[in-house]
Length: 438
Image 1 (cartoon, helix red, strand yellow):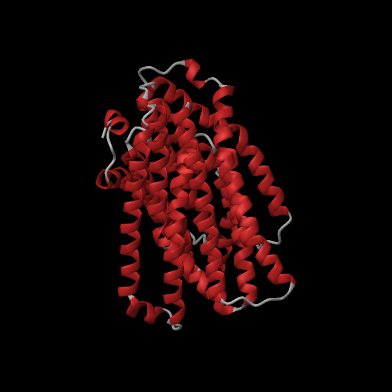
Image 2 (image 1 turned 120 degrees about the horizontal axis):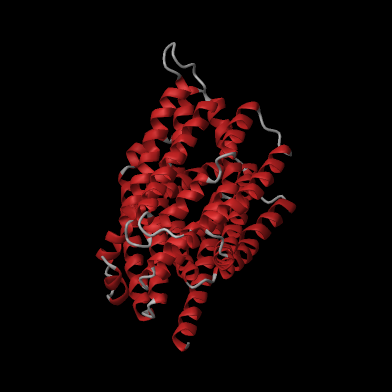
């Protein structure tokens, strides 16, 4: 599918699935990369797994901020690609690396200050401090992948993800458990080194492919700092990254509150979260696709094709969610074997499906708003709605010592994500009208 087909033809559900499928596979690979350490460390010792889980949560604060900002390369390169401004695409990608150079030291210092205030055991600290020096690598890969994804060459991104997984798995086996008398078992430290090797393998692979695109026509001006492009990255990425970090903190608050309520409530939410993780790669793939395609529609002034594109991705979402729902219900016997409290998994399945149904709307309309350079509105909507529908009710319940049932908790979550998706949809529709009038 070339740029002419994208900008001038209606995107059908089949075409939309073909476009987003590689990005879904890439997102699935990213999820596996995040959790492979925990799986193998669980085989080594429970203490090691818990230490890495806690340290990774802290690291995610900095990683989310950098990745979200550098992901803006998909929007910027998408605009330039549809107009055949390939040299400017390369320059825009180089500028994302300048963003990393400027922001990584600040975020690293911030995380070090946060860690200094926390009581961490030695295992968590060793993992955390090793990875802090390479916190920039996932964002580097995100910036590079935006260059290829915007050109419908997501196969480069997918290959890099699975290359990282291969390196990570191989070195995890060697470094965590050791090799006979040659290499001593390193546990958590080995997991950290394996993750770093995986991150670096992905970054090097993408960079080599990017350089091969440039070696015939690379010019010095592409490498020089461009303050206009830097501001563009920050205006697109900073509000969205702050929104994600704030939401991450709110969810942490919600789960802490649920744990305080009792084992039934936290069990329901934990299972629900697990089921949502099974589907999240689909939403990430759809969200990335919408961001890239919407930026190209806006750039080519073919806004009339945007509703058809949105309907196609909604159709894909409904079909995929139905498959997940039926798979979980058909697998009820397996669930009963693993989960002794049968009622909870079934209730969690319905909660997850309800949540994911509206979550897809949010991913899709966030993609549209990012393409329209309206990331501040994403921040405002997420913070405003989460405050009134999650923070205030939780604070009220804690103050009056109210014990909420698992059904009420699930209703709160689904109501929250539905309200956010409606607010984003209304904002996107307003942008459509303004664009048409202009």
